[in-house]
Image (cartoon, rainbow, N blue to C red; front, side):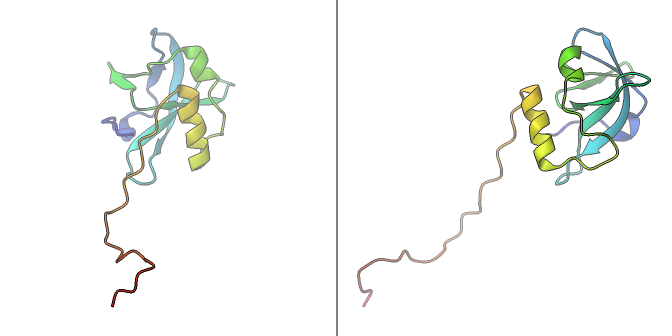
Amino acid sequence: MQTDIDPRNLIGRKAFDRNGTKIGTVDEVYLDDATGAPEWAAIRTGLFSRDAFVPLEPSKVVDDSLHIPFERSLIKDAPDFGVGRHLSPEQELQLYHHYGLDLAPPPPFPDHDFGHLATTEDPT
C-alpha cells in the first residue's frame, strides 16, 4: 500500500478512530520491505496496554494527529505481534484480513518467449 504519510513525523502523534475517539499515541512505524513506504503504525493504546497495529493507508494526518478510518473496538482487537520486531508476510496478511483490506495483486510475470512448444510432430 502506498501512502503520503512521512513516518519520521508520526511518532508521538495522537491517534483517533473514525468517530474522533482517541485510541492512543503512535509508538512505531513499519515500512514495506519491498518499497520502503510506511505501511503500518503501532498505536500505544494506554499506559499499561499493548500496541495495536493500524494500516497507514487509508489513514490520514489531520491537524497533527493520525485519523484511522476504523472503529476503536476493531483497532483494539487487531492481532498482537509485539513491537520492535519485523512483521512477517503472514502477520501482515492477518492484519489485512482483520481490517478487511484488499491486498494489491502481485505484479504480472514478464512476457518472455520461452521457445517453441513441444509437439509430437517432427520439425524436419
